[in-house]
Length: 78
Image 1 (tube, rainbow, N blue to C red):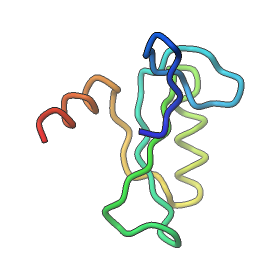
Image 2 (tube, one colour):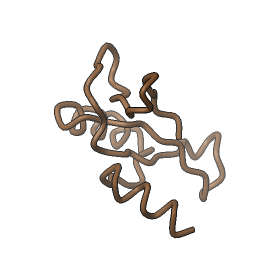
Image 3 (cartoon, helix red, strand yellow):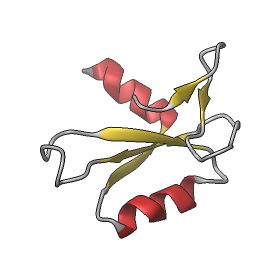
Image 4 (spheres, helix red, strand yellow):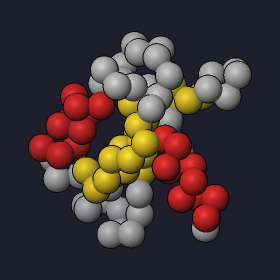
């Protein structure tokens, strides 16, 4: 995952200057650079989820928005 992590392994929001814990995973890819199945990720707190989602969606990059809990569960399932 591309999101930032503190020394306590707490996922932190990817918004510039934000230090709040992440709650959301925004999965995206740039079709000019990545294969269709590749997923990059940004992490978002509740306050920045809409802003970061809109930024990616306007560029046609946003693929999925899920809770961090669901993202970890999906990764554990394989």
